[in-house]
Image (cartoon, rainbow, N blue to C red; front, side, top):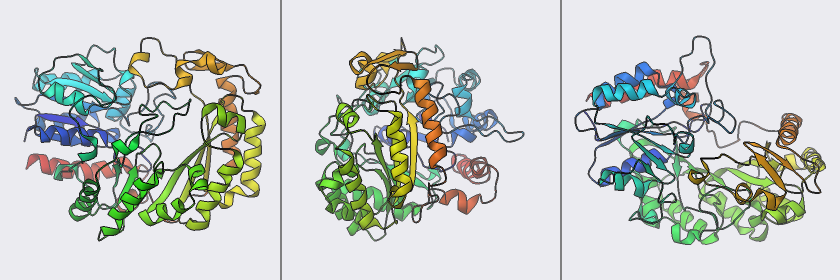
Length: 485
């Protein structure tokens, strides 16, 4: 069967497989407007040979476009091509599509599409589109959230770059009523981890955060109760899927939102599990949230602690003082008792923070914090100064006004002049790497309850690269069977 729209995408991490959301959401939206649409996942494992076999079967005279969702492709910058999904470097390993794209080897894929149908548009979209935007090889480029962009394109709008509605707020797309209806061609398994948006945006405005919907009233961008129920129930009844990664920037921003999802969960005939971003300083003020999160089925959380310096917290508008943050962590532990895997992140190089702040945090982690936190990681602050690309990027306040926060930026390197003693990106990166080594043996893995590797554990135990094995042994044959049928 040939399709009107074909979208290639990738999983979030080659070691802990989780399906992304963007490509599936766009595909569902296209189908609602009458276009046959196919999503093809696991691009890290799709060699050019696999790609050609797929394209030969699904591109025809009716194919309007072949798209590539680059959100989970490796970066070309900000850490290089091995960041996020990475590359398998085993002996004799073949390079996959997403790595080829990250290494600027796009032309063979585009040429083959055009060979089959010269009139088919080759389009790129996703969170890393700014890295591809100046390539002439693309017929269309979609920047930012594209639920409205893409339908405008399907309806005949003839832009080269679609960036006029980057936040996806100015068209007919109704976030609260929208769901994702997966297809047989998506080849889902009960062990898959899918991605779920309960709400979109964040009520906070942290100055280092570049998420596009900062300071947004998420009450106005929360899924309807029946929409959440039907999506969770359908995916379980049809595919056996019960595990989800919640993308909400701050899942526990509003207690009523948690209560709404809890009502949904309690009405289901199975027990879903979730991973989510949680701010524990909120739980310090609203202790009952800890039990509510547990009752919903949250079994892994990420908490952006970011700093151990109270002055830095005030400057970056991130949370309360250190004591309040610790209290929130303890409130959660009192209820969760180790059943919820707690990941905590720290950003090295924020305004006014010092190297002593990081060592003080590590001392607390060694003496006490390890009882409440399972995994502590440090990352250097990244500030973006990329001439020619800034208009296509979502930027933080620090990105936009570095001098206001005492930074000077050139490319991806910065220097800082304030009362803190972390004065450059290179120094921050060295400190982060050193801190990660110091806490390495205190961190706990795997989680007691939440297991993100269930898919690999069931199908690929003992294999050197489970992603490649799973793709070749299971996903690709299943996909080809469906599209051949």
